[in-house]
Amino acid sequence: MRARGMRVGLMEWIVYLIIPIGIIVLVKVVGIILTIALLTIPVSIAKMRFRSIGKVIVSAMIISFLFCLTGITLAYYLNIPSGVSIIIVSATVYFLMAILRDRVRKWKHRRMKHIRSSI
Image (cartoon, rainbow, N blue to C red; front, side, top):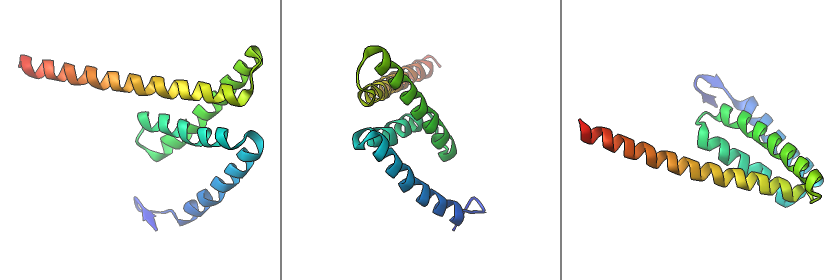
C-alpha cells in the first residue's frame, strides 16, 4: 500500500501491534472506563485543532499526558480517586473546547457576514 508515494505497509503493521499492547497495558493499570476516556477524548480534542494525522497523534499523546498529570495532582490535593479526577479534567477540557469552537465559528460567521454586507 502507498500513501503520498511512500510505502506504509510496515508502519501500518507496527500501529496494529502497538494499539492492542497499549490497550492491554492501560486496562491493567487504570481500568476500562479510564482507558476508553484516554483513548477517545484527547484524540477528539486534537482533531478539533489539527487535520494532519501526525499532528493529531502527537498532540493527543501530549494532551493525554497532561490530563493524567493534572488529574493525579488534583487527586492528591483533593483526596479523591485519581481515575475520577483524570476523567473529570479531560471531560471538562473537551466540553470547554467544544463550546469555544462553536463560539469562534459563530463569531467568524457573523464577522464575514458583516464584512460582505459592508462591501
